[in-house]
Length: 285
Image (cartoon, rainbow, N blue to C red):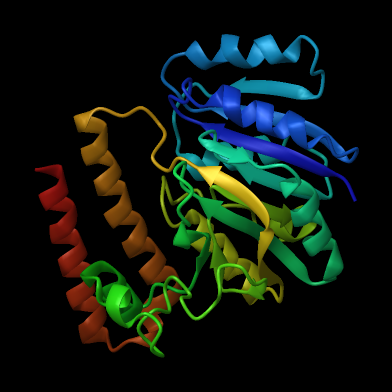
């Protein structure tokens, strides 16, 4: 089985060198191509990437004319690659030695494995719990956002969003992974229609994991594979930060409507829609 890598990037000049170097350092014989898809409003990233292309002939660069979001950038890159497996890797993520081999070994071990994700950590070495996630139901979201899961997360029902019952050092099937570093079986990803581009940013990784599971594919957490994720590594100003908040609210509501709304009474969904709509207006203000 061979693998391709897609790197969506936005104002990622500060991080792209470490990201690309970490991919080259993996050097698995079955890494056949890497494509960087640049959503940035400028082409500052282009010269950085092209400097690697001099002797890295399986590296390519695409600069999108218009920023249509994370999901669209990933899909754009996916249409240009040919691997049996596809690694989606944020530009502010760094693969640690042996990570890609470990992900591939875990994926190939299960005929119905649709996606595999690594143990993610912050640059200071602390574990990034979002790399193994559950479904953000209303209760799970409340526990997470209110901080209840910090105190009661080990108790049944309180820590489901971050899958706190799953040991960070043990491999496991989980409901969802982080899109910051996620290996997907290309045929499975293609069969579900790729990332849903209605999500501009946030929740597209949860959505694709839900779609894969609905189609009968397993989602695997593989702690033998390690990666560093800066998280929020795109250079943003205050205005952009406000826009990010607006997209988060919109994406959460889209995810709720698509996957969860039919599981609650209509009156509950009406309250959720009103609350999230108000939240978006508050963010914009």
